[in-house]
Every structure is written in structure tokens, then in C-alpha cells.
Length: 338
Image (cartoon, rainbow, N blue to C red; front, top):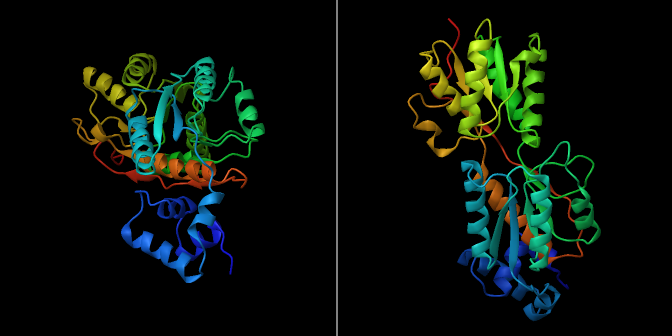
């Protein structure tokens, strides 16, 4: 029996990148996994050197990670997942941040390509003013890349959660607690995640017979200042305060809570506040934040493994869409209506 890399991976119940690591005697797999792989090679009397010849020789052993906000704690966890995985597999990581600028995103991609990196992990911007020509070019060139946010109408490798579903479940939780006046503080215009969470918010209201009120959807942003400024704007302007606020992310939620504290509006007695991401310090604020856990580290790790598999086997078309699980984390910033 003549084995291929795929055959060995299936027989050993591991990824093809793990087979590559074992055959090249590199770190990144356990001794038990290495023994299992090499045992299969020996059993079928196949020369590992023949397999090694089918592997692509890397030119730089480096990848580019492009995120949207370098100071966002969510992306810190993504970066850690990417860095840990790539280091184990012998890759270096170049990091760029678009800072919500489509032009900067495009420039970073071109700059990294000039450095002859082997592939990209990209958290892309979406919305008006975003030119996806770079994406078309990468696909035409068969250049390895993995996206961390979905781009409609493109067959691409994707690692993410179902943001619509996660937001739907979060808002449904608030509704089950008796809330019907629920504000959504949305993220920045170029955030695909914000659009998906908005759709989940709206669908949860509709499915529960609650009117969607346009004045209850307020564009905030993605950082503490955005949440704070949104609070300063809406608290004096609304004739009646909502009973709950669902926020694009934890930073916005914490910024908003700071304003509530200034106005001496108690959380959650007067207003329940829910975040999204489950950043580390969300549980350590004065009123620990109810939020949705975004598995950021696992997203970075999974995307890295998928990218390196694509780099190793460039002639194998990959269009894998991997959805990781998001989970509601109940803490003290939300309560049932009395």
C-alpha cells in the first residue's frame, strides 16, 4: 500500500501538519502522537523521505497576522493563540493592525507580501469603502490565507463563531429575564461582527413579538471611550431609560457602566448591561459583567493550524469554514425584571 500524507493523517487521526512535524523530527506534537505516526509509516513500509519530498519547502517560515485594533484585549488573545501555535511549528509571526482603515489594511497586505511571507491570517474590515480586490488577487494567486470574519460571496478559509446566533441567544436571555426595552450599542461601521450581532439582536426581538425601535440601535464603537460617549449621549436624550443594554463588546459595556455610575444609576437594579467577548478584566469590575465568551485564543490557534496546512499543501484546494462555540457567561450586571 502506497500512502499519501492524507492517508497517514487519517490512519493516525491527526492533521497533515502533525504528520509533517513528526516526519521532519520537529517539536509541536506529543511523543505519543509522534510514535503513532511513525508506527503507521513503518507498518506500511513506506520511506518517510519520499513523503518529505512531497512537502513544500518554506521560503521564509513566516506568516502575517492582520487585525483591526492592536489595543483591543480580544485581539491580544487571538495573537497569543497564533503566536503559540506558530512558534511550536517553527513559524514567525508578523503583526499588522488596520486600525479600522481600509487603505491601511490594503497597504499592510502589500507590505507583508513584499517580505515574502508564506500566508496570511486576516481579520478583514467590511462595509462601505472597503475594496476586496486584494482578496480576489490572493485567490487568483492561490496565496494561502485564513479569514477571521466572513466575507459574503467568497469561498475562503474561515475561523469564527456564529455571531448572529450568539447575539440572538444573548438578547433572548435578556427577554427571558423580562426585559422588553433593550438598547443595542453597536460597533464601528467597518465591523462585520457588529452587523451580524445587530441582526441577531433584531431577530430575537421579532421572534418574541417585541417591536424593533430604530432609536434603540445606537452606533457606539469598540473601546471604553466609545461606550462612555454613547452613555453620555443617550442617558439625557431618552425620555425613558431602557431596562437593558446589549453592547457590541465588553469595552463598550464597561465604558457605558462608568457613565451609569456617574449618573448614580444602579447596575443591574435600574439597568441591566451585557457585553460581548469575555475579556479578562470584565469579571473584575465593580459589577462583574454578564457577557458572551468569544473563544479568542482558540480562534487564533485554529486559524494557525488551518493556514499552515494550506501552506504545506498548496495544490490542495481548501475551503474550510470552522465555527467555534460562543457561550453566555452569567455574572452580576444583568438581573430579572421585578
